[in-house]
Amino acid sequence: GAVVSQHPSRVICKSGTSVKIECRSLDFQATTMFWYRQFPKQSLMLMATSNEGSKATYEQGVEKDKFLINHASLTLSTLTVTSAHPEDSSFYICSASDRGQGRDGQFFGPGTRLTVL
Amino acid sequence: LAKTTQPISMDSYEGQEVNITCSHNNIATNDYITWYQQFPSQGPRFIIQGYKTKVTNEVASLFIPADRKSSTLSLPRVSLSDTAVYYCLVGDFGGATNKLIFGTGTLLAVQP
Image (tube, rainbow over all chains, first blue to last red; front, side):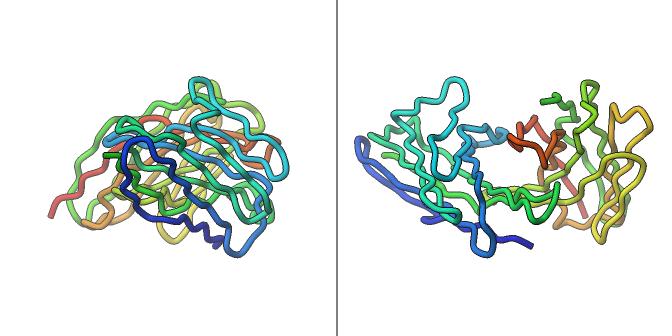
């Protein structure tokens, strides 16, 4: 099946710094990618929809200036957490749609564990 | 997007069949039903998808009644490694937006 990778797998940073997380579709082109956040023992929460070549669509309550999304190519979307604070510590997961796979074609990355000190 | 309701948790023993039911009363005509599995600190993994009646693959079966207001994921002969959270999602996965909204999921705990 289609493979989605994320980098880094985990990152620890100081409060106030910015962190960039990459999401790549390795063997297919993804016009749409999605970013989720998951806190411990909770479900995945959709943050935004990333569209190649256009602005991301953010879910209600998600600050677009804090979580910058860039989908510059059909295989890469990046999420930048700007001026990170301890409350931004979470598990960030991306997914990508492979329309060529038909209706079951949404595949998830392995996730990135962000810890802000 | 149709809302889904699942049991928060279930317990089972190795070798048993496990059935997890999901309610989705507001499912739309174009919606498909998809189940994902998630282990701790990993991304969700696709298990099975269906539209109506029954679908079976190498790891699970999915039963969908005629009214499609619910679905049941069936895991045959579970093992300890099947301990995970299982999510039921409903949506038009091939549609324009294609976004997924996750519910609470069901934490399945398999004991020896």
